[in-house]
Length: 377
Image (cartoon, rainbow, N blue to C red; front, top):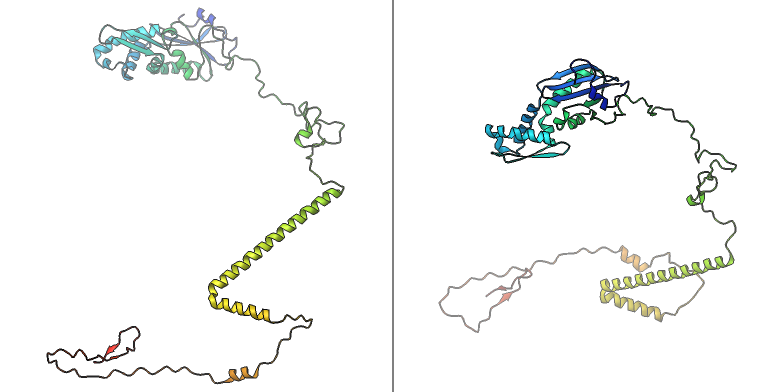
């Protein structure tokens, strides 16, 4: 790394485009802190910033604090145990490499510790926030095309993941420059004009056929979709010629069968209705109605049946006896007189003697229905 503006030799490992459209930033990390610079297409540094407070020892303390906070090493809340944990955190930071986790064994209170890359990313959030601010300060109003991770950044596990989570494109030596960011001069073609009339469409291609559609070019069989050659829906039409003699005879037989079946159903319905009416009359009329029915049936049997073509004559005058009965005075109903009251008798004083067993008691009927007779003596 060079001090001040100049050219950095390790930038040759990165394929920087000759004329990047955005900001290309480079970063290094070591015991003297963080250096960050902005480079152009010729790999010349055109701006730089330094942060001497972010050193590897600070990251070790951050990682040890994260292990205590997430409960992996709760006994490190003791200052003496925490001081023993810091070297173990430094060991895992330098040995994790490309792996997801690293192990470290101690000789004191902390005998064993396991640190993951996620733990290191979460532990160094404040330091990454400071680097984010340096990026914005160097890029200005231009977008950041790429961040080139230079020497010493491999001693900061999780730095690449931290930049990627924030939407930046972090590159390691040998990685291709991102084509979706600045430096890609190829046309995207997203805004190119589309031809108004496509070359081949089955529903617009004209042919010698009478219809507006042609299925020959597209390989569609109209019969598969119940269409005719013109693309119209085929409907089932009735035949022009009338039915044959055999068909008419078959239809006549079917009509006769249906007529006979309907007649049987009607007869069965009438028979059932008559039976139900007869049973209902017998149940409600009782023997009297049955006797009347039998008498009327016998009278009808005795009378000779006369058939005459003359119409039945209906009398138009009333019977004189019926007229006299109708004009007679209406009789009024008179209620019968009440029964006479019972006779009052004076009871003789008792003499202490028993009554004669041969003496019979006299009773009078009680005028109130349902009550016992009245004893007179």
